View 1 (cartoon, rainbow, N blue to C red):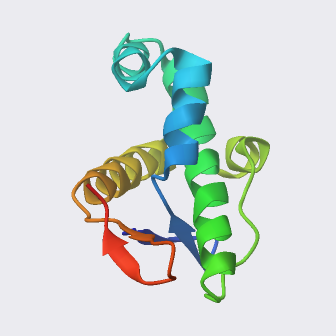
View 2 (cartoon, helix red, strand yellow):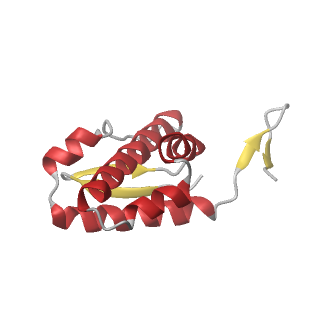
Length: 123
C-alpha cells in the first residue's frame, strides 16, 4: 500500500487511503462521488467539515499502517484538532494532500498474504 507523508505542526504524519477510509466515506457520505459533490457545493463550512474529517480519517489509517509496519509516527490528529489549529490557507494544502494520497493509493498494486505466508499479488 502506498502512503503519503505530510508535515503538520512540525511532525511528519502518514496519510493512507485504505479500505477502512473508503468504508468510512461510504458510511458517512454514501460514496466518494457523493462526497466530492458536497465538497464542490460552494458551502465553505461543508468543505471545511469534509476536508478535516477526511484528513483525520486518513491520518488514523496512516497511523494504523505505520504501527503495523514498525514505522515511527506520532498519534493522528482528530478532526477537532484540525479545526482548532488550522486556518483557511491550510485548507488548500490539506485538500491537495488528500487528493495526492487518494491518487497514489488507487494506483498501487497490493500484495495479500497467502495461506502459506507468501505474498501473492492481489487481483
